Image (cartoon, rainbow over all chains, first blue to last red; front, top):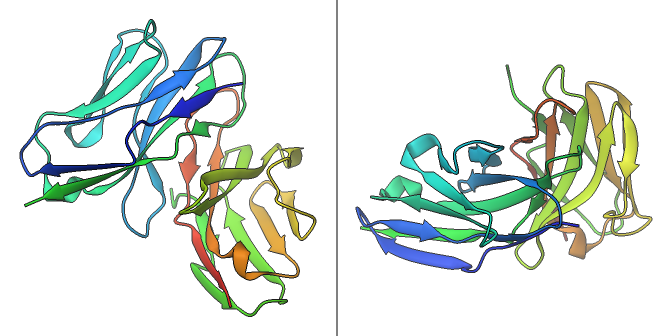
Amino acid sequence: AQSVTQLDSQVPVFEEAPVELRCNYSSSVSVYLFWYVQYPNQGLQLLLKYLSGSTLVKGINGFEAEFNKSQTSFHLRKPSVHISDTAEYFCAVTPGSGNTPLVFGKGTRLSVIA
Amino acid sequence: DAGVIQSPRHEVTEMGQEVTLRCKPISGHNSLFWYRQTMMRGLELLIYFNNNVPIDDSGMPEDRFSAKMPNASFSTLKIQPSEPRDSAVYFCASRIQGISHEQYFGPGTRLTVT
């Protein structure tokens, strides 16, 4: 079975500063990895995904993530955050061979401070 | 495409009442998922369907919860009788099994049981 650990439940950061949201996963098979964003009172939206190929994945709103197989990590980064990036961010994993549901981490609340 | 549609968006009911949440997946998607989100437990998978057939309902909390998918364009999640601890945001998500691994989420139904 797969599992996801998001090491930080809350991350405060000043506007225009860089940010990294950490995600580690556990799996005995190859996996696909995802980051979703949830704005207040909304559903989850896909930010980016890693299926194969380049380990650096670029997503919407200037976010990117890097897949590191040896460290079983998929950290999310943005070089300069905006107030509008304030939201909950979820990392998710699914085995690459099957069609099972995504397994989500508990989320990281990013608060951007003016 | 209209995306995943959920109704109602908000539901307030009294303990002991029956509650029915509804979901219309994206047209052409053949997998459907029901999740529950609370502060304490995060995002929990309740049940999922492939081609209208329930595959795994191990996440359903107890017998008070039931879900159906009578056709490819409609699903319901029913709670009978409802209890205050059922208060949460319930999300429906869909995807194309075997082709796309990302799940597309609806806006959610915020349920409050008093």
